[in-house]
Length: 250
Picture 1: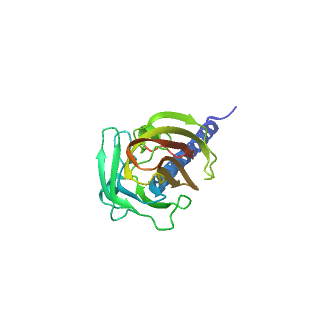
Picture 2: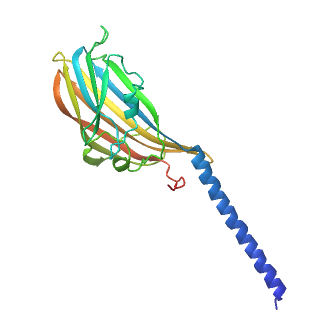
Picture 3: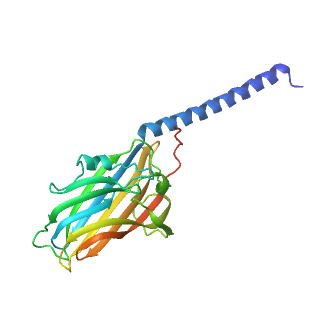
């Protein structure tokens, strides 16, 4: 028969093993979460490009500014302070909240390209900004929780085009519609385009670098002068990257 002392020793030994394993698991989880929190960096990348094949004059655009469903936008403050890379000195920018969307009104007497500009070699003005986010960006459900070009209408899921980013994950892609106002004078054969994009990205490093992101892009191509609202085609790719990082509690 096994003596009582031996039973006690075996029981204590098993208890110590369980305690060591439990402590190791807790320590590992705490290390992983602390490392994740310390290295987490969430940013938005914003860009807007106006391209024309010849001179346009008396220009006014109302272009959607990416904002969440509550109207919060990472770009608004940069426009307010004119802290946007590439913003021409003769462009006047004013922000408007329409109740359904946040718009930036851009006015300028004209856009005059260099003499060599043509339909084959158009002239572009590009605005851009890198914007830190104070909170984790929802890259899985950006329509509901992150900055997009609103109002978002007629959302429909589509097959994702080939992606050369090398990021893992199972991305999902959508087309949607929104609106843009364009008012300018131009010759009948002038080609003008407006393209704007927003990318929300979370980066971290625990044992190796990790990230996830979403990106959205709107684009409109016009021929000749315009004087009113236009329907704009939008594209969204979300759920791209890794989603095995710890959940951060509020």
